[in-house]
Every structure is written in structure tokens, then in C-alpha cells.
Amino acid sequence: MSDPQDYTVGWICGIELEYVAAQVFLDEEHEGPERVSQNDKNDYTLGKIGKHNVVIAVLPNGEYGLTAAGNVANDMLHSFPNVKIGLMVGIGGGAPSPDRDIRLGDIVVSSPHNGQGSVFQYDFGKEIQGRGYKYTRLLNEPPTVLNTAVAGLKAKYRRHGHQLEEAIKGILEKNPRLQEEYKRPDPYTDRLYQTTHPHPRDKRRVNCSEACGIDPPALVHRPERTEDKDIPKIHYGVIASGNTLMKNAEERDRLARERNVLCFEMEAAGLRKDFPCLVIRGIYYYSDSHKNKEWRGYAAMAAAAYAKGLLCRIVPSRVEAERKITDIISSG
Image (cartoon, rainbow, N blue to C red; front, side):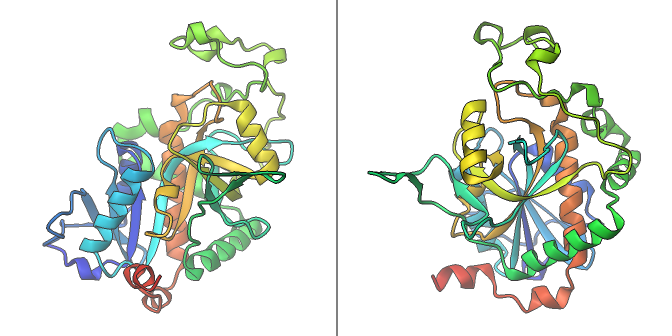
């Protein structure tokens, strides 16, 4: 059995679909922990990525949102007290705009913008007279070692491109039973509807191609991505987190415009001060009423592939030099 003291990287997934994607990108899988905290309710997968020992946990089946994520993080840190860097990896909703060509299957990595932080809770704040709505819950920024690795990886990918698509194909070749759910869908299924064209309320159970149509007036025209462009594309910027699934295109566009939000998700703000981490999300729908489940598996794979590349960029001695997350929390 594995010694919990040996694990310095904590990786949290929101759902089982993301948990599978994280597991298959491990270079080695270890036996389960020899012991955990008495009240720890988490399920763990242990292994190695590059030269780092990684502990992966998932939210309980059927539980979503900020509170559940916070509980998983707290239990992990009690059982694995030597964790020094944290990752929240999974799927989310994109917020495309004229300035950001975000498409299904792309990756969004949390990154500060104009000093406002990289993750905030969009459904918590206060209304101030004459100043509008102020968001008051921000996620603690991840350790510098993670932000430095992101910068290094950006430079590498800009010069040489990335091989994330090839990495995903390689994983699926080794795991053929996952291909149907996790392979990249036909680009034809990636449709961005106009903000003024929501999914009909009386046709919630009817797919979008039938209920909403595929005619040009209903869709946002976007040029095809050329072969010289990396697929998936990686975006760096602000992620909005909340307790409810974002399915409102008008609200999506407002927050993209006012707060430069690139992605919406449901767990990261629950980690707030208790698990400072980098948030990595694969995009599977456009944060509107046209929810697209076809891209969930591929989006989860894309996020996990990026996370693995990031960890392989980090020298183990840099992680060893970091403070334990439990020490950071206890010191306030």
C-alpha cells in the first residue's frame, strides 16, 4: 500500500467522467493508500505523472457545486498532508466573444486579468449604490511554481505547437473501450447559436439540430480552423464559478464583456482559501441553453492532457521547496 506522505500533487475532479480521464493519463498507477484520515469519505487514485506522485479524488456521485468540492479538498489534505500544489481539472462552459474564438474541445486555464484574480464566484457578492454589483469571493491564486510552469508551457507551445491531440489519440488506442465516449466528435456538431436564439422551452428534450435548426441566421458564423493551427486551442484567462450551471447566453456575454470571463464551471470557488489551485477546463458547451453532451468526454481528455503536460514541465525540486497547502491555510 502507498504512503500518503509521498504525494505532493493533489488533483480534484468534479465527476466520474473527468476522473477516468485523469486516471488514464497517469504514467504509473499505485496501490491505494495504506491509511487515510478517520473521517475521510473520498475515493482516491494514486500514481505518478513524470516525476511527481499524484493523488486524484472525485466528488461523490450525484453531488455538485462549491460545498462538495470544498469537502473533498479538505478530506484530501487531512489524509495527504504533504500536498503542495493543487489542480482542479475537468469540463466547463465556454464564453466565446469577438475577441476570443473559443470552441468546443478547447482548453481554458485560469489566469489573472488586470489584477482581478483568475477565478471568482459569479453568484456571490453585494450591490453597492452607484457602483453596481461587486463580486466578493475570489479563489486564492495557485503557488508561483504552477504559474511559472504555465508561462513556460505557453512559450514552448508557441514555438513548437503542442501534441495534445496526438496524446489523446494515443491514450484511446491503449483504452479502446473509451473511444466512443472520449474521442473528438465531428466538428459539424460544434454549433454556436446566436445569443438571441435560445433553445425552445417546449422542446427541452429535443436535440438542437431539430429544435433550433442549423440554418445560418440561427448560428454565429465562424471560419474553419486551418490545419496549421493547434487543435485543441488553449486559452488563458478568468474563470467564473458558481453553484448553478450557466445556461444563459445573455448573462454569459455580459460577464465575458465586463469581467473578461472565458469559462463557467461549478466547483472551483468552493476551494477558495482551502485549496489554492490552478483550474483547467475543457469546453463542452457554450454556457447557454443549447447544452451539448457530445463533447463532454473529449473535453475532459483535453483538460487532463494539458494538466499532464504542465506537471511534466515542473522540476520535482521546485515542488519540494513549496510550502504544504495545510501550512499555508493554517497561517491564514
